[in-house]
Image 1 (cartoon, helix red, strand yellow):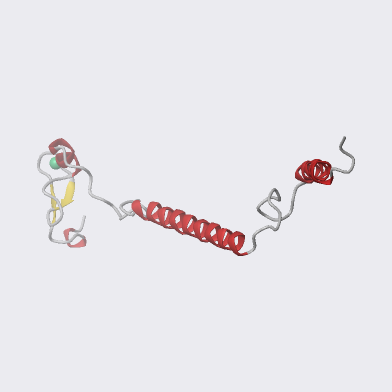
Image 2 (cartoon, rainbow, N blue to C red):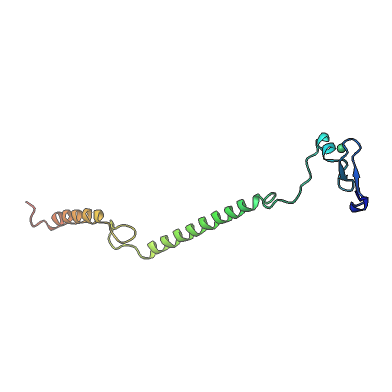
Length: 121
Ligand SMILES: [Zn+2]
């Protein structure tokens, strides 16, 4: 065993006979485990510590989406305001659904009967 192969800071634990880097640790692995110290981080795991990052991105995305929806809604309301349907009863979009069309025809017929009066007794 060539002692020159290790850095000078690497020493042997007298209690456990294990080598450890005295520059980085106060004892060998067993010593540190006995002392209750957590094992040293081998490498900064990607993702650990940056757990809030995806959440922040998600929050921003939600905000942007909500804002876009709000803007679209505002535009729709503007459009509805400026392009009001001529007849009340037509759906806001200006395109009555078949059901609404039927209902409107009914109402128009009733109106004709009421306002015409020619056929009324
Ligand atoms: Zn030890």
